[in-house]
Figure 1 (tube, rainbow, N blue to C red):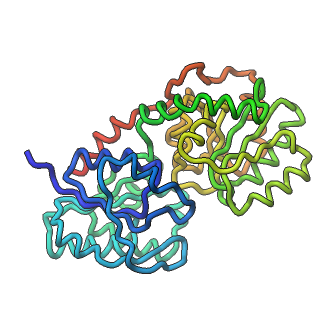
Figure 2 (figure 1 turned 180 degrees about the horizontal axis):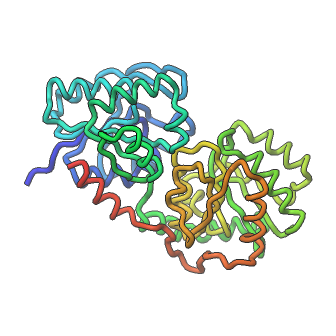
Figure 3 (figure 1 turned 90 degrees about the vertical axis):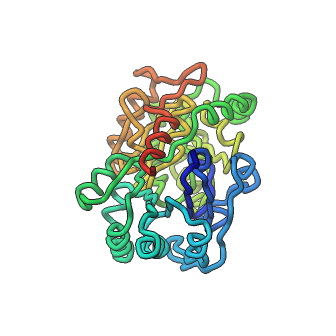
Length: 372
């Protein structure tokens, strides 16, 4: 039996999408086009990413950037539809390109199904710009369905667009692949513990860009209050960004230089080796479409203190972490007191054991069935 033809248009290849694209390539006769050779928000080692793919990606980079929240226009995507004659098309978000692809397909190839991947959290969906709301309303009249990253977002879309067919397919990765990378990096983990003198410390880990929406000033200020009670606590910030200098200055003002480590940015094995160092990962964002680091941390067996405004909050249960309001300093301080003091046992394992509430394979099967 011939596999259905799937044509995918996506913004750029990122580490946390590798398993998704490989899974789609396995299930369908797939052609995947990326509009950029790297993410605009951060640059990854493209060659390392390409080595992990089971297919050869194509790039459709002719066009221009709109220089507003990463929006762009690309040329040639309608020609690709004519050339490949797909049964299914997978777009990204509610862009002009998504609307044009859906409209073109309905007029010239009505049997072709057109879906879009939408990474909205509820907050992002509710606070969309007027242009995005118009694009969303127009696109949803034409699309066969949308793929959402979390359950609360699906509930919001089902309430506001009841005729739209939806499925939740979070930005998660293959457990076996992540566990293998973390296991291979045990020597790196040991080096980090020795280099930064983290043995017998209560380690709170942040992984991500040091930018405004990550709410790191808030985190550092709460952590400073907590350090007064527990001098054994260490906050490790893994990443870089335009808030780096400001955060360094804040740490000095609060006199907690000995308790906050600016580790810098890492990729691949060097990044994943940080997870086993921690007692908890924290994601304090005030706006976060998902937060792939939550999935990575849980796979590595490290529980998560997660903002309830992050899309990845849908991965947290009473076994693998706790949610908090990223505007409530008192609440977060109480969480630190309760969990980082060791008064409640953490689920940090001696051997890697995933804390994910479900597997990548299970969600991938459901997504493939939905697209069929």
